[in-house]
Amino acid sequence: MAEKVLVTGATGKVGTVLVRLLLERGVEVKAGTRRPADAEGLLGARVEAVELDYEATETWDEAVQWADRVFLVPPPFDPRSDDLLVPFLDWAVQSGTEHVVLLSAMGAEARERMALRRVEQRIERTGVAWTFLRPNIYMQNFSRGIVAHQIRDMGEVRLPTEDGMVSFVDGRDVAAVAAAVLTVDEHAGRAYTLTGPEALDHYQAAAIISEVSGRHVGYMPVDEDETRYSLLAAGWPEDQAETFSRLMTAIRESRRAGISQDVPKLLGRPATTFQAFSREHAEAWR
Ligand SMILES: NC(=O)c1ccc[n+]([C@@H]2O[C@H](COP(=O)([O-])OP(=O)(O)OC[C@H]3O[C@@H](n4cnc5c(N)ncnc54)[C@H](OP(=O)(O)O)[C@@H]3O)[C@@H](O)[C@H]2O)c1
Image (cartoon, rainbow, N blue to C red; front, side, top):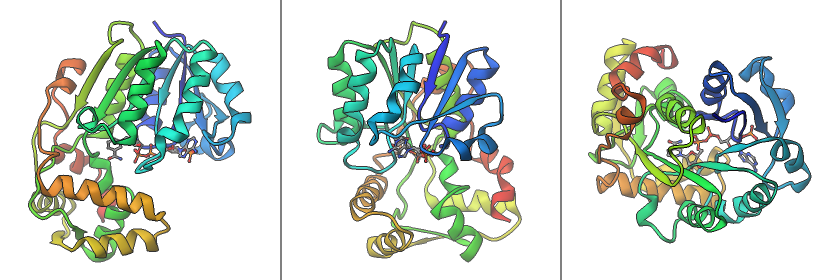
């Protein structure tokens, strides 16, 4: 059983839930964030938030020297995440980290040029015990961030995904899997693909959101440029908007449609459906 876990990305969609689940299991946790002063409101007073920035070596010591295991979260859509994470990772392994659980992404194993795959390969080479979690797109992208804003402001989802199918996964299921693999040794050397129980296109997802929220929400297929401009207007860097575009292409080609049984196998219960997720998050769209 792990005694001390450093959760990086602790303010994020998975990290926030994972911190709570680990505390419930009696695990000691430090929550890594670039802004620890802001984190207490989000995470509660029971967890110690520590400053951690992959780009600031002076912040690595306090969090990493203490931990037995590290949950490693790459910043989203960053095509340089390998440049960013590898020095931190190497340093953690040299400092005695025993197990690294990486939050990777579905399909990384087949994409040698993807930054997340390069992080995976580096972890494999260090000799540390590792587990890779490869989730599909989170359902939470409908309740937080750009799509949630579109729904609230315009009553529609506007993405260039057309009728591409996606087996969206609930980020809370991803956190539950992370808590399970961080607290026993048997998952070392394993990679898990984490999806929901069904594949939906964005027309179907919008119809479910309409049904549970009581307001009409439609899906409007748009061209890639519209999405790109709105991301840039929201302050996304050019290269991250480019990575987002590649994901949209993968969806259009239904390369995010596959359904894995890893969530039910690891949790001993079915993966959360989009319907159940939407019922629990209906307030986000009202
Ligand atoms: N979102 C999805 O649908 C999805 C799907 C599949 C896989 N994933 C995986 O999940 C990862 C995270 O994506 P997300 O969208 O869920 O984001 P998120 O975890 O909700 O937010 C990103 C987190 O990264 C932290 N962070 C950003 N820059 C950092 C830095 N320089 N040093 C240390 N921490 C930093 C932020 O912490 P602070 O701001 O508190 O410092 C924040 O907690 C992706 O890279 C990918 O590997 C996500």
